[in-house]
Image 1 (cartoon, rainbow over the protein chains, first blue to last red):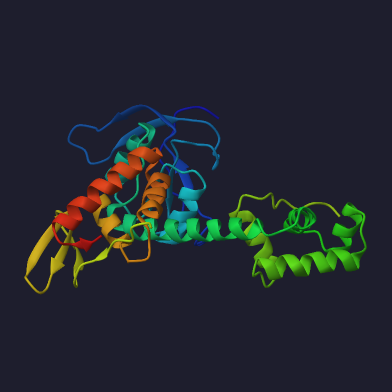
Image 2 (cartoon, rainbow over the protein chains, first blue to last red):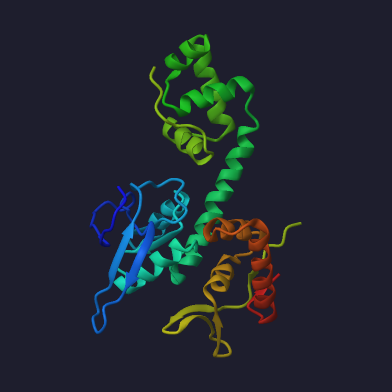
Length: 196
Length: 87
């Protein structure tokens, strides 16, 4: 969907998932003489959160939303409450390959990334304590299979699958299936639903 | 053993019109810091390692590991020299 367009700032009540994306490749940025409006023309590809190196995300003024954006591969994040001038400046920066994070939020974001990385490292270490069979069970559980589905896939009894699941949760200090999926996702394990 | 820098004394981050700074209530001094140095100072909690700070900065800033480590080392040296952290 390449083509010229205008910066559009949609609104949303969704605290985390809301993102507006713009500024993929600028072909013209100009300010009308004597006017306060900024004329921005840009063109780009359909919106895509992953793999975009020059993606500026606009969202709520919250560090967890920003963390979500950064971890999704965004090169920049700005609260939608910022002025149009600031947004334009940020959009131009990310289109030039620079990272954009509001100065006053950088510290909080840095600490959050440290915590997330620490948790990921810890979980990766815990994963090393699993046996090869438990790894297989873990990966299937991460994709939503219950003990019956896991048993069918791996040719074992449901009781054995349950035992493996119990061992995994004990070794990894996991208390629920939801926590298991969250841990798997944090480690980059595939958590896309698998048909039973 | 990894270095785990920590704040020196009681310092208050302040957001001024012209940038970020640390205020030292004991002396009344104000230390102006660039955003990256302020973020690094904030991470100096005595628990977070230098490598953890550099890794997080690499992730956030889109820079390579060596650049992030040099940046963190340089900032930490300046912060320590100014008496804002202890290494």
